[in-house]
Length: 492
Image 1 (spheres, rainbow, N blue to C red):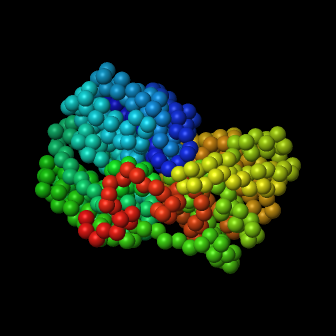
Image 2: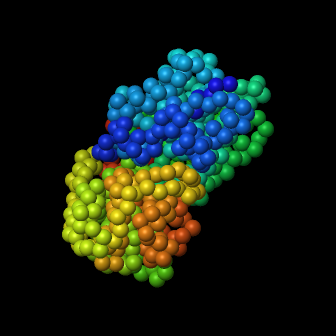
Image 3: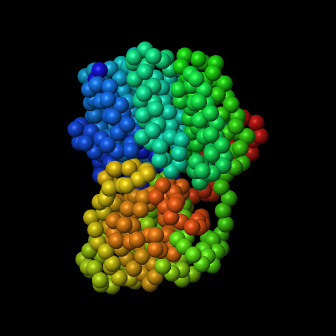
């Protein structure tokens, strides 16, 4: 058979001012045709799992596009249309099945439901085409996304360290469908819950218990896949929020049963899905009293992995003010600062107005640079290969990068946005994170993939930014209402 394998991934933060054009996709993780195949073959991505499965079963694969961008604002129309056109062109040529590696929280200038609209367009061309989809745990599932595919699944981990496994699972369901061994039916449902991503780690309750229950469902004969989607709460559109999808082999009643049970359990634990923090000054002061490290300091409100600008200096400024020592920071996005440091050269001192280049009107903040003086310690091209366990084998680029040593603090500065979920953000620029007392990371939960086993203590720092967990700072206009915790409701 001729099987279409394609990837189109973006987690859209509709509050983010960061532009999402085609260049953002192609620069970070975009490849066409054979280049897409070569980039993701033998990697830990769903795309890699699809290739392995199809080829192991003797099928031909066609790979029109593999494109991913770091989370940011709405996907521009030309970018969305370019990516979807590449996929639709191959469907028009003719394929026997489609295996898609999508995200599930894409909002574009032309549609609020990026994935559902793509699937609907595929179905319009080939109404009977078998389609399997792998989604992110933070998917905002919609009716279009369910109605226009044969089967779907989502990651069961956050950080997402099971991408290959879930891709292989749903890919096998598709191959079994093509062979007439199974007949997938799906049941899905939403809870009236806008859960916060800081409360979705798979090792933390309530997500841990929900995932255990989903695995219990999958252990039952006839249940092909069961997914708990935490949802992505910073995509302000109607269907944002938490949901469940169960895929069964021809048994609608069993699918409905497990769907209902999972949704009810999710709703029962709704209060645990809401984050409660502490004043930044107190958090940093508490970190200062911890004698052993590494201590992980999470600047979660400016997490580019959720659409942050990655140039808010609030937490870094407080760390400098309280004079924490032996600190490494990953990372500040400031291409202009990197260019200046390249001119100055390694080993020389420089004074910079660092970060604070981006205004954030959705949360009423203006960019506020922090003037610092330090020594240029390293300059690199920012390219390195992820060694896992998340995005294993994928070559990524932070753009031209630099390290500025400000007193006892080493700050990694990049020319492209990149969340620190792998040790490579430090090791690629010559920093050995395991020997640092403090690691300040602009991350929420993904940091655990690379740093979870390294940090002896973790402190969440409530700074500023468009990935804030303070709902009072966000003006939700489009999400379905009533929804908890924006509305105090007791019944679904």
